[in-house]
Length: 152
Length: 152
DNA sequence: AAATTATTCGCATAAATTTCGCGAAATTTA
DNA sequence: TAAATTTCGCGAAATTTATGCGAATAATTT
Image (cartoon, rainbow over all chains, first blue to last red; front, side, top):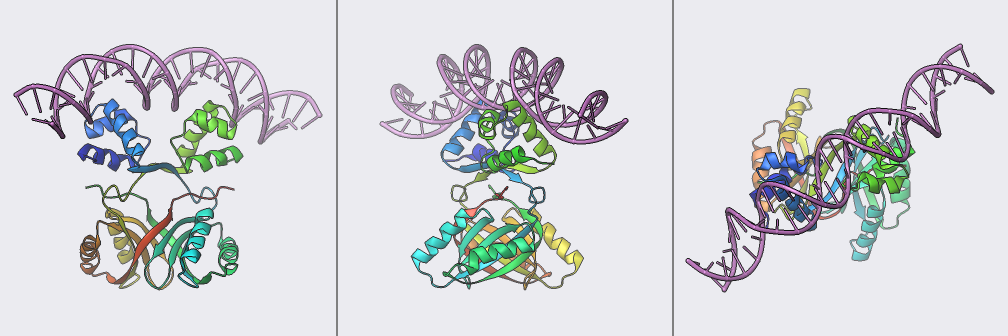
């Protein structure tokens, strides 16, 4: 399915997907044409799921990140699905995980400032009958934020 | 610093940075040349921090994600800095936040399976004198995982 | 307000990169 | 080991990106 050269390509593009096929070619030891073809295949097969630019939170005026643990009133599948959808539709929520343990979900939420976050919680949580409670953790420092995977 | 057209460009490329300047041109209403020049500027100014390919965790054989809350023995700056470095250097850790609240850090860790995660905790936590304790939460479903920001 | 200066724009064109056709090499299957 | 399939890499074509430059727009100064 995916061989050693694919892995090398993935290692590089998951750090920088703007490398040209000639540059990748040198790094993985294959002609630019073949590298290009492999990239196409990796994208077609969704081994590369997507290609994105990461925008600076500071530059865009959203310097705050919160980690929010959410507990639902009941673990009923229709309630869970409704919550999942609301989370997907909210652009202030960067990521959302359905998890084991005391709480049901953990969200990553960005905000302009505390007042803005406050407003978000009002809209998103207090208005919502399905939500039993939530707990906010403030991110003081982002040591690392990536989707990189160790590939062999 | 950044105007309405820049924002439109950012909105698009944070979802898909493989769009050509001609495609972006249509979407934002500016010539391809100008779009290209703006992209360059946005990258030079680190408003676009980086450009990455997101690799499928399943395809690469790392289907498990854990959220790990870590508490250090003492909140001494040298200990904190040492921990930060170890986290940055570990490719199994996708993201790491220094946070307020009961724990000091929250990490996102990927693993092949539970045994693999078990091995990681041994290496990373039990070996480490600086760590008082940690709590693992297993991700059952990744509803959303992005670095997208709401840009106006 | 008018004039000056500085930016940004978009066209034309040059440079670079990606895509495609094709035969050769390598790998897989029979 | 022969046949079939896949992958390779070269060269050419097509597409995309980068650059030069005058025109238009916006900002600053007087």
